[in-house]
Amino acid sequence: MHSYTRAESRERSKLFRKGFRQALADCVDPEIRRKIERIDQAAAARGAQELAALHKVQADARQDLAAAKAVERTASRADRAAAREARKAAEQRMRLAERAVHRAERS
Image 1: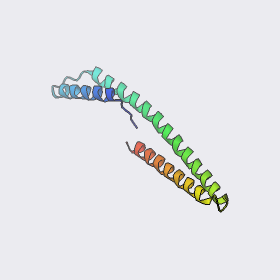
Image 2: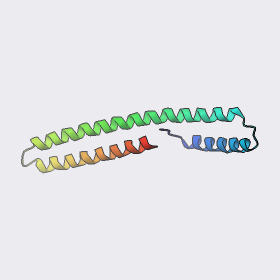
Image 3: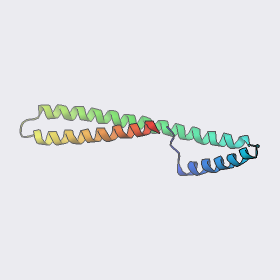
Image 4: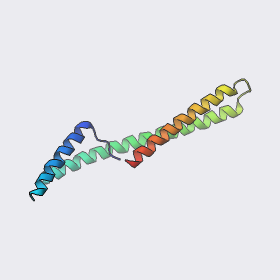
C-alpha cells in the first residue's frame, strides 16, 4: 500500500512526465528515477504504518463486538434492549473497520 501526500503526488507526476519526454528522446536522466523511487519508498513506508493502524482498529473493533455480545447474553430482561443496541453499534464499527482494511489492502 502506498500513501502519497498531495505534494508527493504532484512531484511524482511532474517527474514522470519529464522522464517520459526524455524517454521519447532516448536520454533518460537517472536522477529522475532515483527521485521517483525515493518518493515511492516514503509513500510505501507511510502506507505500511497506516495499514498496521487499520489492522489494530479492526482488532479492537472485533474485541469490542465480542464484549458487547457477552454483555447482551448476560443482560437482564430490562437491560437487554440497550445491550442489543450496543451490540448493533459494535457490529457497525467492525464492518466499517473491515471495509477500511479491505480498501487499504486492495490499493
